[in-house]
Structure formats: structure tokens, C-alpha cells
Length: 102
Image (cartoon, rainbow, N blue to C red; front, top):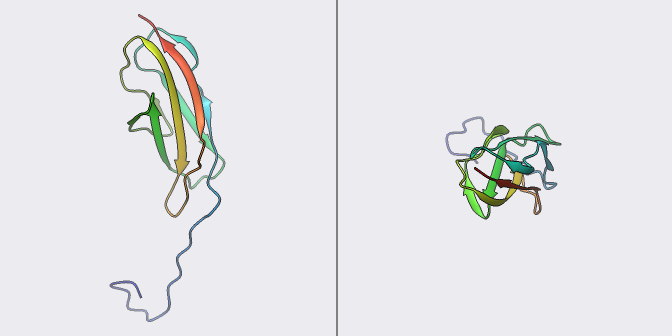
């Protein structure tokens, strides 16, 4: 029984066992002259609304459509995993490689 639940009916909790797939809708690639690179993400499951993002293995807050944190000149690899409430995260997500120059 769930705390505060007074309907005296047994509750069922569901977990989706097939993780959603994420792809870049706008993929950062090539050489960029700005330190904040634009990207946009797409998932095959509309309820997948949480993303785990990292650039060169450093995590940052990300959303479905945004820009990266400010980046100094260099080469970068951005990795994204998708998930949501009651969902598993996929093991290998979307990957984008790009460079930033000044």
C-alpha cells in the first residue's frame, strides 16, 4: 500500500523495460566559431523527457533543445542518453563530434 492512499485498492507500478532511443535533430558537427554550440534532440517515445548529457565525459544540464555550456577552443565529443519516469536509460545514446575555434 502507498502512504496516504485511502482507497484500499491494491496499487500497481509499471516500469518500461525497453529504453527510448535518442537522436540529434540538430547535430553539432564540424567546426564551430562560437563557444556555445546549438543542438536539438528527438526520441522515439514522447514520454522520454529526461536527458543525460556529457561533453568529453563532463556532465551538464541539458534539455530537448538548447545550447552547450561555454566551451574553449578544442575538440569535443557530446554524448546523450534518454529516459524518463519509470524508464530505463539506453546503454549507448547519440554521439556528436565537433571542434570549437576562435
